[in-house]
Amino acid sequence: MGTIYDVLKEEHDQISDLLRQALQDGSKVSFFKVKLKADPHMMGEERLFYPVLEEVEELHELISEAYKEHSDAKTLIFEIEGMEERDEEWTPKLSQLKQSIDHHIEEEEGKIFEKAVNFLSQEKAEELAKQYIEFKRSYMNRIETGEPVV
Image 1 (cartoon, rainbow, N blue to C red):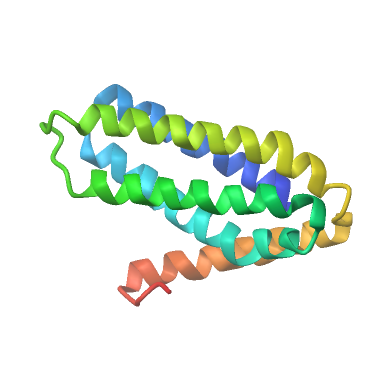
Image 2 (cartoon, one colour):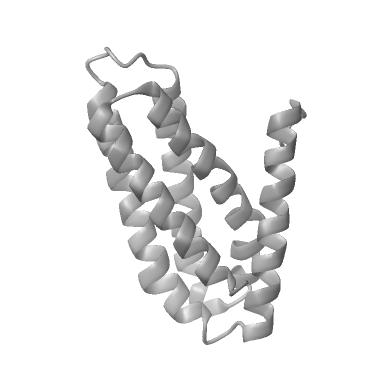
């Protein structure tokens, strides 16, 4: 299965690819693919990965910034969700979202992951990966059945 870092990195790559596609074709369908991948990803990080890392003094500031970056991305996603493809702000907002998420991924992989490996054991990183995958499975089941996702 791998570690939490492997799982998150793979999802980062998928989200980046989906964002590129959304910018290329400018379609709402492509945007919703980004949203469907990004929403549970951010929620899983916030519920399972970040709380463990917040306990490490050296990571506290980076994790606080990561929460803020998630908040910014969620705000942009919400704004874009309410727009039509033909709105003049559609493409600039999508571009802003891509820049925001690309920056976040770079910070997370380049700084947070780099430092986290010094504090999380291999076993803990593997356990977090399992918990994260199970969280996402449950989240997607709720989406499919129309249950509230909280």
